[in-house]
Length: 224
Length: 224
DNA sequence: ATGGTTTGTGTACGTTGTACGTTACGCCTA
DNA sequence: TAGGCGTAACGTACAACGTACACAAACCAT
Image (cartoon, chains in turn blue, red, green, purple):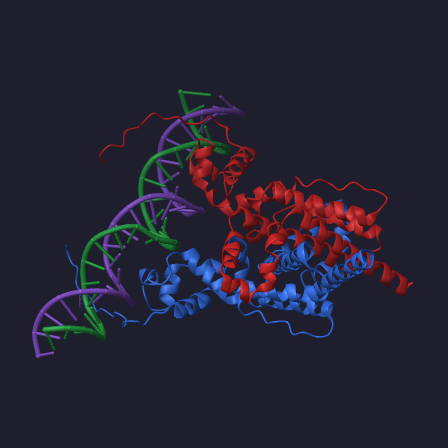
């Protein structure tokens, strides 16, 4: 009752909202940290209203899913060289890159698993490469999930590091009692500062690939 | 005004609340899914009131940190055998087990990195084992973070799988068009059902360890 | 008993996701 | 040109959340 003055309406034109636009806006908002991604914030970003979005997205989780699916779609397809194990490395790096380029998305990827159809080609690429190396079936699935796991976990460390962790570790080690209780940890304080770096990643990836290759060679040698 | 009847007070005895009790309660609540872990829920679980908890924990995040630190403290220390690379495997499995036993904690671990002091011995154990294998400095830190990354990522897949994902993948592949577009993925539909299984984990771990060992052997051989 | 310190509580505010019913745009028909 | 109607956009409202703040009750030392 009281004073429902019409107020200067600035209603938007019909059809002015699309799912793409919403995702664009959501991504812009999320870039400042996934925690800032709220329906209201996206609406503000789009100069719309919260409920307007619900015409295109039935729930916030669905929006996040769509957003994650979108960024997974930006993974670059690994090009074939003659060397399957090298290609597997390219695959791994390309996947890691996509996570690296969208760090805000990493925490969400853990709560919103397998976001959508854009995850399919990723598996397909990996299986193709592995197949060229003679790795199929369970071994292929396991190897594939191993690489993805490594990247997911790694990405979470990178994000955590940027987010301000690791600092606490450094602080702990300043305490002499702590340093004495954990001498080995204290002794790697310097390498620890490269924790999550590309150099370390390359080192780990090289280890994993060496293992994949050697075990494949062994099983092929033994099996036939 | 109206009816602020005193109501049957059941005030709690002094000292009846401790941080340990709060963490116990929080863990019981969280067991039903991290999303159900709210200050109010923990208070109800403890038959207390929300604000009472704030005497012991200054923020919800702090409570979560403490909780995660607590479960990290439950990782079993890997016992030394004569074989360092085997011990590294035990380390990895023990770490994985702790995540497996507290699946509800996994999503939180990604948003609350390096929860507390209980993380320190874990690193120390790993560095000791790696040192026995002659791996130190950057290589040790990288290898260590590689194993943790693998476990974190793997755990997130396991949780996701239980949470109901993977089902969507299976459904997608029922669609003949999808199956045709991603033939390799379709062809591993069966192995995919063991996605995240212990068998697959052992396979990946064996690969990683083989790589760690071989590369270490090589660098030692070349270096001296 | 008295006063101070510690522990528990009630109320309340701001923010979130979103259910529900209403408004008004802009095309389609007459 | 007038009217009607489907649908996009909106406003309001609610429950649940974290937690600030002021206060009350229990305890201890005197």
